[in-house]
Amino acid sequence: MKNVICTGIGMAVAATASVLGGWDAPLGSLVIFMAVDFATGLLAAGLGKSPKTEKGGISSAVIFTGLAKKVVILLLVLIGYRLDLVLELDYVRNTVIIGFLANELISVAENAALLGVPMPEVIKNVLEVLKSKGGGENDG
Image (tube, rainbow, N blue to C red; front, side, top):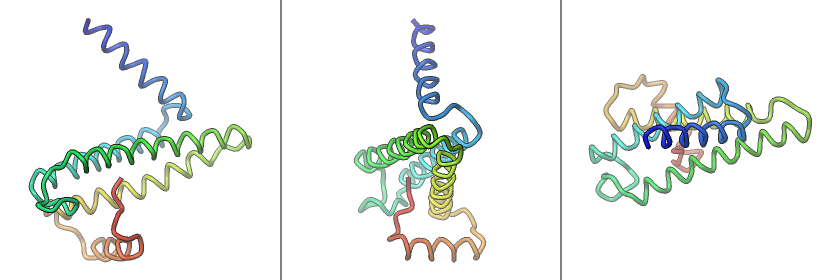
């Protein structure tokens, strides 16, 4: 049974990666950044420091919303890949990925700051500017 489950998961991951243009460094990096963002956000909420809930704690609705956003990000990567195929280009997908890598990185930095990780003043200033221009929602 264990082999069947592992094989099924492996096939699902391989099929997903194939649909998204193949498992390469950009896609792998995006998945890692998304996982780190999710984990640091969960840690912040677990410590009662989340700005997304009244008491700063973990909320299944916030978790679901965050995961839904991550799925939409992957769907946008899919659209970028399909545009590359239709237009016979090779950079739309990676441009989409790079944009979301930046977004995830900002969110990870915000989560790290919530967790009390010392941030250089320049990073704090950049986060403040981005929050004020983007409406304060850089999470993925």
